[in-house]
Image (cartoon, rainbow, N blue to C red; front, side, top):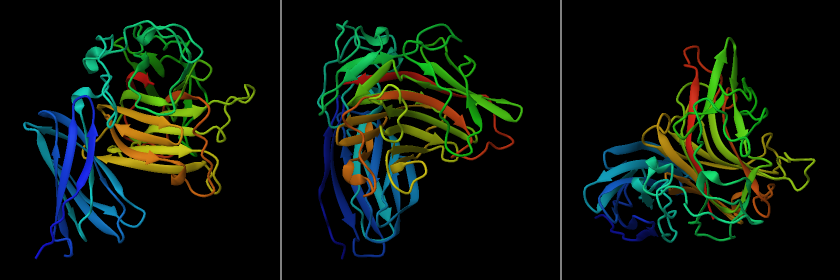
Length: 417
């Protein structure tokens, strides 16, 4: 006879969703088991859902079904869990998550956030709801745009509102919730113009590890505004070579703690490496790029061999790693994230960093997450922002049939403190 177990999975809230889950594990002592989670939401509509399967005592495979989407035979085991992303549309106030495991029942964790709220200035999952502001210039992604009130210049942040904010340094509190929109960039200007040089600097460095084939240039053909309130970073092929662009805010704009998000359409293709990331500022101006001592937080990395996967990574001082990679996790979507807009972000506290996809957390790192030989360098100093597309390196070389140009479009970047 099957054992019956019930437990509360999680209670989270955002501006538009409340999730209360209970699970029933069937056949937990048999060679396979089914777990059903009933996720309750505030209203009918579309939701981004992340199902986290923790590491299991022994190796097994897990299949997860959410609405009409599924991810089958995902491997988990000792020290190896999984984060799986879905999009579900419900006409009621709940949806079901069914998990079939090849061994004992697994205790899945389900978190969701309304797709309508993504990028609209809503609170992150788990945070308190802040008041809505008036519609801003980037209102195509939601009802709430950039903040409309003008601030005063201060030592901790720029003055102005929304896209008129001047460069500077933002300093958020050491604890969230981070719901106050303090800075927004939606890349205004005519098609073909370079992005605002008082914020974004073309950087000739960068790349995607050993074997990178592309060279970063300041040419507007590789990085320019698209005339529709967005930034286009384009990798181009020139015979046997490639050009692309890396933009950074070093010396112009930095952030210390808060919620950092960008709405990005990652290009599909072959041999591509797209990224939205941050690097720590050096206290010594004569050594502005003090990697790895100042740390690197990769908010989003996508490589073309895995079109449905988003990587979250920390780089810093650590023994035994040529690229100083201290920690990495990823979330795998039931549908490709390439060739469609998604919101990628981190919620950054001094001793805790949470990665989000479409507003829903999928990975968390703390000092305890790092190997013993690593040093946590993600507190006490500001970080600047970077955006780039590279060719070759980590994803390998493009195939002979790869289509170029390949463009990553950034709709907006936003900072909440």
